[in-house]
Length: 188
Image (cartoon, rainbow, N blue to C red; front, side):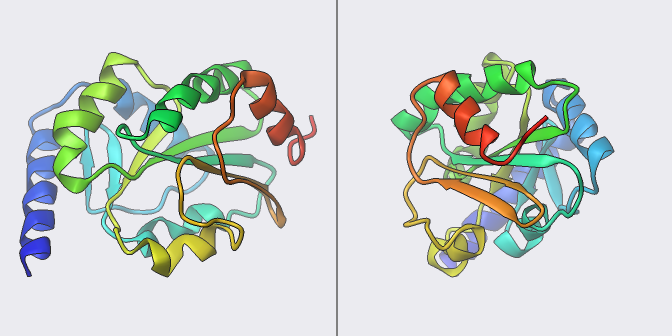
């Protein structure tokens, strides 16, 4: 019951902040993402970042059947290897701009740190791939839906196009390593 109250408080704060006109950098990114394929509806956003209370709300992004390759990275600001690999995702997303490749960074930050830690982190670094927030802490209920290979540790990345999937259960250590992993699915 206490968890539900905390979650409700965080979501209420997120809604209030987004209604007050938070910075627009992430909003532009969300708009670009929505233009390329239907984005799952959400109950709230924070400065343009969609916030998903449960994995089932976000699940449609793992089922798109189109000509786009999706690079979906699970990360958090408190995860040192996640933060260390993030620049490679940003660089590679810029390098593939205009190509049918879409980068989505799914934050697993703690609900009580979304406003105080995640938002400033994203804004200070002007992160351009779409950042979505997943608050569903019942990881064991949904990680197999992302990939049966996933043991639950982050960072973790799923790269897919239709039925072709490649899963990385550890951090990448260079842009070239990420580019090679994307190349297992995306072939221009």
